[in-house]
Image (tube, rainbow, N blue to C red; front, side, top):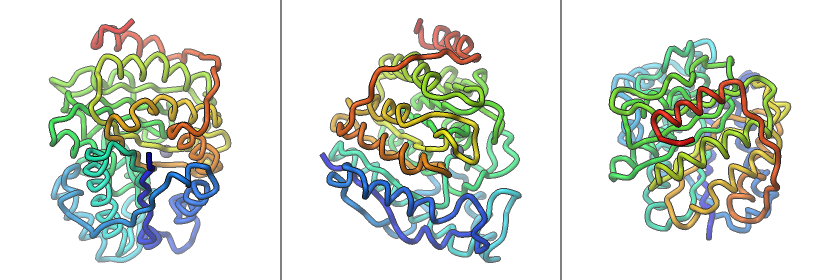
Length: 340
Ligand SMILES: [Zn+2]
Protein backbone atom coordinates (compact mmCIF):
# COMPACT_ATOMS: atom_id res chain seq x y z
CA UNK A 1 0.00 0.00 0.00
CA UNK A 2 1.38 3.36 -1.04
CA UNK A 3 0.76 6.83 0.33
CA UNK A 4 0.56 9.27 -2.56
CA UNK A 5 1.75 12.76 -1.70
CA UNK A 6 1.24 15.87 -3.81
CA UNK A 7 3.99 18.40 -3.22
CA UNK A 8 4.87 21.08 -5.75
CA UNK A 9 7.28 23.98 -5.42
CA UNK A 10 4.73 26.20 -7.15
CA UNK A 11 3.39 26.83 -3.63
CA UNK A 12 6.40 29.06 -2.93
CA UNK A 13 4.99 31.67 -5.31
CA UNK A 14 2.30 32.31 -2.69
CA UNK A 15 4.26 34.25 -0.07
CA UNK A 16 4.19 37.52 1.82
CA UNK A 17 7.59 39.07 1.00
CA UNK A 18 7.91 40.37 4.57
CA UNK A 19 8.04 36.74 5.77
CA UNK A 20 5.90 37.66 8.77
CA UNK A 21 2.61 36.04 7.77
CA UNK A 22 1.78 32.65 9.39
CA UNK A 23 0.86 31.26 5.97
CA UNK A 24 4.47 31.09 4.86
CA UNK A 25 6.16 28.57 2.54
CA UNK A 26 8.23 27.21 5.45
CA UNK A 27 5.09 25.41 6.67
CA UNK A 28 5.08 23.00 3.74
CA UNK A 29 8.84 22.55 3.83
CA UNK A 30 8.60 21.64 7.51
CA UNK A 31 5.71 19.22 6.91
CA UNK A 32 7.54 17.58 4.01
CA UNK A 33 10.74 17.18 6.03
CA UNK A 34 8.70 15.55 8.82
CA UNK A 35 7.35 13.03 6.31
CA UNK A 36 10.85 12.39 4.97
CA UNK A 37 12.10 11.74 8.50
CA UNK A 38 9.21 9.39 9.20
CA UNK A 39 8.90 5.68 8.50
CA UNK A 40 5.96 6.56 6.29
CA UNK A 41 8.41 7.87 3.68
CA UNK A 42 9.16 4.28 2.61
CA UNK A 43 5.53 4.03 1.49
CA UNK A 44 5.42 7.45 -0.14
CA UNK A 45 5.10 8.20 -3.83
CA UNK A 46 5.62 11.86 -4.57
CA UNK A 47 3.63 13.68 -7.27
CA UNK A 48 3.81 17.19 -8.65
CA UNK A 49 0.64 19.18 -9.27
CA UNK A 50 -0.81 18.93 -12.79
CA UNK A 51 -1.63 21.95 -14.97
CA UNK A 52 -3.86 24.58 -13.34
CA UNK A 53 -7.55 24.15 -14.07
CA UNK A 54 -10.56 26.44 -13.70
CA UNK A 55 -12.85 23.43 -13.91
CA UNK A 56 -11.53 21.87 -10.71
CA UNK A 57 -11.87 25.12 -8.77
CA UNK A 58 -15.41 25.66 -10.05
CA UNK A 59 -16.57 22.38 -8.53
CA UNK A 60 -16.60 24.13 -5.15
CA UNK A 61 -16.69 27.85 -5.98
CA UNK A 62 -18.98 30.24 -7.87
CA UNK A 63 -17.72 31.74 -11.16
CA UNK A 64 -18.06 35.26 -9.70
CA UNK A 65 -15.58 34.33 -6.95
CA UNK A 66 -13.08 33.03 -9.53
CA UNK A 67 -13.48 36.29 -11.47
CA UNK A 68 -12.82 38.29 -8.30
CA UNK A 69 -9.62 36.30 -7.60
CA UNK A 70 -8.49 36.79 -11.20
CA UNK A 71 -9.02 40.53 -10.89
CA UNK A 72 -7.15 40.69 -7.56
CA UNK A 73 -4.26 38.65 -9.02
CA UNK A 74 -3.59 41.40 -11.57
CA UNK A 75 -2.48 43.78 -8.86
CA UNK A 76 0.42 41.70 -7.53
CA UNK A 77 1.09 41.10 -3.85
CA UNK A 78 -1.50 42.72 -1.60
CA UNK A 79 -4.01 41.90 1.12
CA UNK A 80 -7.60 41.22 0.00
CA UNK A 81 -8.80 41.35 3.60
CA UNK A 82 -7.03 41.93 6.89
CA UNK A 83 -5.80 38.29 7.13
CA UNK A 84 -5.45 37.09 3.58
CA UNK A 85 -2.95 38.03 0.91
CA UNK A 86 -2.74 37.21 -2.77
CA UNK A 87 0.16 37.45 -5.21
CA UNK A 88 0.15 37.47 -8.99
CA UNK A 89 0.84 33.71 -8.85
CA UNK A 90 -1.37 32.62 -5.90
CA UNK A 91 -4.36 31.74 -8.05
CA UNK A 92 -2.22 29.79 -10.52
CA UNK A 93 -0.87 27.73 -7.62
CA UNK A 94 -4.38 27.32 -6.21
CA UNK A 95 -5.72 26.09 -9.54
CA UNK A 96 -2.82 23.64 -9.87
CA UNK A 97 -3.54 22.17 -6.44
CA UNK A 98 -7.26 22.11 -7.32
CA UNK A 99 -6.32 19.95 -10.34
CA UNK A 100 -4.13 17.82 -8.08
CA UNK A 101 -7.11 17.28 -5.79
CA UNK A 102 -9.21 16.01 -8.71
CA UNK A 103 -6.37 13.73 -9.74
CA UNK A 104 -6.19 12.42 -6.17
CA UNK A 105 -9.94 11.70 -6.18
CA UNK A 106 -9.75 9.84 -9.49
CA UNK A 107 -6.66 7.84 -8.59
CA UNK A 108 -7.88 6.95 -5.11
CA UNK A 109 -11.20 5.79 -6.60
CA UNK A 110 -9.29 3.43 -8.90
CA UNK A 111 -6.58 2.15 -6.54
CA UNK A 112 -8.14 2.73 -3.08
CA UNK A 113 -4.73 4.02 -2.03
CA UNK A 114 -4.72 7.18 0.12
CA UNK A 115 -3.67 10.54 -1.30
CA UNK A 116 -2.29 13.49 0.67
CA UNK A 117 -2.47 16.87 -1.05
CA UNK A 118 -0.19 19.57 0.38
CA UNK A 119 -1.53 22.81 -1.09
CA UNK A 120 -0.76 26.46 -0.62
CA UNK A 121 -2.67 28.77 -0.58
CA UNK A 122 -5.22 26.97 1.70
CA UNK A 123 -7.94 25.82 2.31
CA UNK A 124 -11.00 25.15 4.40
CA UNK A 125 -12.14 28.74 5.15
CA UNK A 126 -12.88 29.54 1.49
CA UNK A 127 -16.61 29.11 0.80
CA UNK A 128 -18.64 28.98 -2.41
CA UNK A 129 -18.42 32.73 -2.86
CA UNK A 130 -15.33 33.22 -0.70
CA UNK A 131 -16.18 34.69 2.70
CA UNK A 132 -18.36 32.04 4.37
CA UNK A 133 -20.85 31.77 7.24
CA UNK A 134 -20.32 35.31 8.48
CA UNK A 135 -16.53 35.03 8.78
CA UNK A 136 -14.82 38.43 8.74
CA UNK A 137 -12.00 37.26 6.46
CA UNK A 138 -10.91 34.37 4.21
CA UNK A 139 -8.58 33.19 6.99
CA UNK A 140 -5.49 32.90 4.69
CA UNK A 141 -7.51 30.71 2.27
CA UNK A 142 -8.32 31.14 -1.42
CA UNK A 143 -9.31 27.69 -2.75
CA UNK A 144 -11.16 24.98 -0.84
CA UNK A 145 -9.57 21.68 -1.87
CA UNK A 146 -11.55 19.58 0.63
CA UNK A 147 -14.73 21.07 -0.88
CA UNK A 148 -13.48 20.21 -4.37
CA UNK A 149 -12.69 16.61 -3.36
CA UNK A 150 -16.08 16.17 -1.67
CA UNK A 151 -17.93 17.61 -4.68
CA UNK A 152 -15.96 15.36 -7.03
CA UNK A 153 -16.98 12.27 -5.05
CA UNK A 154 -20.59 13.48 -4.87
CA UNK A 155 -20.63 13.98 -8.64
CA UNK A 156 -19.87 10.27 -8.95
CA UNK A 157 -22.87 9.45 -6.77
CA UNK A 158 -20.90 8.50 -3.65
CA UNK A 159 -21.78 9.22 -0.02
CA UNK A 160 -18.94 11.31 1.37
CA UNK A 161 -17.68 11.83 4.87
CA UNK A 162 -15.71 15.06 5.23
CA UNK A 163 -13.88 15.14 8.55
CA UNK A 164 -12.08 18.31 9.63
CA UNK A 165 -9.81 18.15 12.68
CA UNK A 166 -8.08 21.47 12.13
CA UNK A 167 -8.51 23.59 15.28
CA UNK A 168 -10.44 26.24 13.34
CA UNK A 169 -13.97 25.65 12.10
CA UNK A 170 -14.00 24.66 8.42
CA UNK A 171 -16.65 27.24 7.58
CA UNK A 172 -15.86 27.23 3.87
CA UNK A 173 -16.24 23.47 3.52
CA UNK A 174 -19.45 23.55 5.53
CA UNK A 175 -20.81 26.33 3.30
CA UNK A 176 -19.94 24.35 0.16
CA UNK A 177 -21.61 21.15 1.45
CA UNK A 178 -24.45 22.85 3.38
CA UNK A 179 -27.31 21.71 1.15
CA UNK A 180 -26.03 18.24 0.34
CA UNK A 181 -27.48 15.41 2.43
CA UNK A 182 -25.07 12.90 0.86
CA UNK A 183 -22.12 14.78 2.34
CA UNK A 184 -21.67 14.50 6.08
CA UNK A 185 -19.27 17.10 7.44
CA UNK A 186 -17.94 16.59 10.95
CA UNK A 187 -15.88 19.47 12.23
CA UNK A 188 -13.98 19.33 15.53
CA UNK A 189 -12.68 22.77 16.46
CA UNK A 190 -11.79 25.17 19.24
CA UNK A 191 -14.81 27.18 20.37
CA UNK A 192 -14.62 30.97 20.28
CA UNK A 193 -11.67 31.58 17.93
CA UNK A 194 -11.58 32.47 14.23
CA UNK A 195 -13.85 32.21 12.20
CA UNK A 196 -16.49 32.34 14.96
CA UNK A 197 -18.86 29.84 13.31
CA UNK A 198 -19.38 26.14 13.98
CA UNK A 199 -22.14 25.99 16.56
CA UNK A 200 -23.86 22.67 17.20
CA UNK A 201 -27.17 24.16 16.00
CA UNK A 202 -25.70 24.76 12.53
CA UNK A 203 -26.66 21.28 11.35
CA UNK A 204 -27.20 21.74 7.63
CA UNK A 205 -29.59 23.31 5.15
CA UNK A 206 -33.12 22.28 4.24
CA UNK A 207 -33.19 18.63 3.26
CA UNK A 208 -29.73 18.09 4.75
CA UNK A 209 -30.53 18.59 8.43
CA UNK A 210 -28.23 16.70 10.76
CA UNK A 211 -25.54 16.08 8.15
CA UNK A 212 -23.34 18.93 9.35
CA UNK A 213 -21.99 18.04 12.78
CA UNK A 214 -20.03 20.66 14.67
CA UNK A 215 -18.10 19.66 17.77
CA UNK A 216 -16.83 22.82 19.48
CA UNK A 217 -14.25 22.17 22.19
CA UNK A 218 -13.33 24.77 24.82
CA UNK A 219 -9.89 26.41 24.77
CA UNK A 220 -7.16 24.25 26.34
CA UNK A 221 -8.88 21.01 25.31
CA UNK A 222 -6.56 18.15 24.51
CA UNK A 223 -6.40 14.42 23.96
CA UNK A 224 -9.27 13.53 26.30
CA UNK A 225 -11.77 15.77 24.50
CA UNK A 226 -10.49 14.66 21.09
CA UNK A 227 -10.93 11.04 22.13
CA UNK A 228 -14.49 11.78 23.30
CA UNK A 229 -15.28 13.28 19.89
CA UNK A 230 -13.82 10.35 17.96
CA UNK A 231 -15.43 7.62 20.07
CA UNK A 232 -18.82 9.27 20.64
CA UNK A 233 -19.37 11.26 17.46
CA UNK A 234 -17.19 10.27 14.52
CA UNK A 235 -17.22 6.49 14.96
CA UNK A 236 -21.00 6.16 15.50
CA UNK A 237 -21.70 8.40 12.49
CA UNK A 238 -19.37 6.36 10.29
CA UNK A 239 -21.22 3.23 11.39
CA UNK A 240 -24.63 4.77 10.68
CA UNK A 241 -23.73 6.63 7.46
CA UNK A 242 -21.45 4.03 5.86
CA UNK A 243 -19.45 6.53 3.77
CA UNK A 244 -18.28 5.47 0.33
CA UNK A 245 -15.48 8.04 0.23
CA UNK A 246 -13.50 10.05 2.77
CA UNK A 247 -12.17 13.60 2.59
CA UNK A 248 -10.02 14.65 5.52
CA UNK A 249 -9.14 18.26 6.32
CA UNK A 250 -5.96 17.52 8.24
CA UNK A 251 -4.88 20.56 10.20
CA UNK A 252 -2.33 20.24 12.96
CA UNK A 253 -2.94 23.48 14.86
CA UNK A 254 -4.74 21.71 17.72
CA UNK A 255 -1.27 20.51 18.73
CA UNK A 256 -0.09 21.89 22.07
CA UNK A 257 1.88 25.12 21.71
CA UNK A 258 0.48 26.15 18.34
CA UNK A 259 0.77 29.95 18.15
CA UNK A 260 -2.69 30.42 16.59
CA UNK A 261 -4.83 28.33 18.98
CA UNK A 262 -5.09 27.36 22.64
CA UNK A 263 -5.50 23.62 22.17
CA UNK A 264 -3.34 21.04 23.90
CA UNK A 265 -3.59 17.91 21.78
CA UNK A 266 -0.51 15.71 21.55
CA UNK A 267 0.60 12.96 19.20
CA UNK A 268 -1.96 10.70 20.86
CA UNK A 269 -4.88 12.61 19.26
CA UNK A 270 -3.39 12.40 15.80
CA UNK A 271 -2.60 8.70 16.22
CA UNK A 272 -6.26 8.29 17.08
CA UNK A 273 -7.39 9.99 13.85
CA UNK A 274 -5.02 7.75 11.90
CA UNK A 275 -6.32 4.67 13.68
CA UNK A 276 -9.91 5.76 12.99
CA UNK A 277 -9.26 5.85 9.24
CA UNK A 278 -6.88 2.89 8.97
CA UNK A 279 -9.65 0.30 8.31
CA UNK A 280 -10.64 2.24 5.19
CA UNK A 281 -7.14 2.39 3.68
CA UNK A 282 -7.36 0.03 0.72
CA UNK A 283 -11.14 -0.30 0.87
CA UNK A 284 -12.46 3.26 0.33
CA UNK A 285 -11.15 6.24 -1.61
CA UNK A 286 -9.42 8.56 0.83
CA UNK A 287 -8.19 12.07 0.05
CA UNK A 288 -6.42 14.00 2.79
CA UNK A 289 -5.80 17.73 2.44
CA UNK A 290 -3.30 19.63 4.58
CA UNK A 291 -4.98 22.58 6.30
CA UNK A 292 -3.44 24.58 9.16
CA UNK A 293 -0.66 24.00 11.64
CA UNK A 294 1.86 26.66 12.59
CA UNK A 295 4.02 24.95 15.20
CA UNK A 296 5.42 21.55 16.04
CA UNK A 297 2.10 19.91 15.15
CA UNK A 298 3.25 20.12 11.54
CA UNK A 299 6.04 17.70 12.43
CA UNK A 300 5.00 15.61 15.42
CA UNK A 301 1.24 15.59 14.84
CA UNK A 302 1.57 15.00 11.13
CA UNK A 303 4.05 12.12 11.52
CA UNK A 304 1.85 10.53 14.22
CA UNK A 305 -1.22 10.75 11.98
CA UNK A 306 0.37 9.22 8.89
CA UNK A 307 2.31 6.52 10.70
CA UNK A 308 -0.86 5.49 12.48
CA UNK A 309 -2.94 5.70 9.27
CA UNK A 310 -0.52 3.43 7.43
CA UNK A 311 -0.29 0.93 10.29
CA UNK A 312 3.27 1.79 11.31
CA UNK A 313 2.40 3.02 14.79
CA UNK A 314 -0.15 1.93 17.37
CA UNK A 315 -2.15 4.43 19.36
CA UNK A 316 -2.80 3.49 22.93
CA UNK A 317 -6.01 3.69 24.87
CA UNK A 318 -6.66 6.82 26.85
CA UNK A 319 -9.19 8.69 28.88
CA UNK A 320 -12.17 10.54 27.43
CA UNK A 321 -13.71 13.74 28.67
CA UNK A 322 -17.03 15.06 27.42
CA UNK A 323 -16.79 18.75 26.53
CA UNK A 324 -19.42 21.30 27.67
CA UNK A 325 -21.21 21.13 24.30
CA UNK A 326 -21.16 17.32 24.39
CA UNK A 327 -24.75 17.11 25.49
CA UNK A 328 -25.92 19.27 22.54
CA UNK A 329 -23.95 17.07 20.16
CA UNK A 330 -25.46 13.92 21.68
CA UNK A 331 -28.93 15.41 21.25
CA UNK A 332 -28.18 16.09 17.59
CA UNK A 333 -27.01 12.50 17.09
CA UNK A 334 -30.16 11.17 18.78
CA UNK A 335 -32.48 13.45 16.84
CA UNK A 336 -31.10 13.04 13.34
CA UNK A 337 -29.19 9.76 13.48
CA UNK A 338 -31.00 7.69 16.10
CA UNK A 339 -27.66 7.30 17.90
CA UNK A 340 -27.47 7.06 21.68
ZN1 LIG B 1 -6.55 26.08 11.58
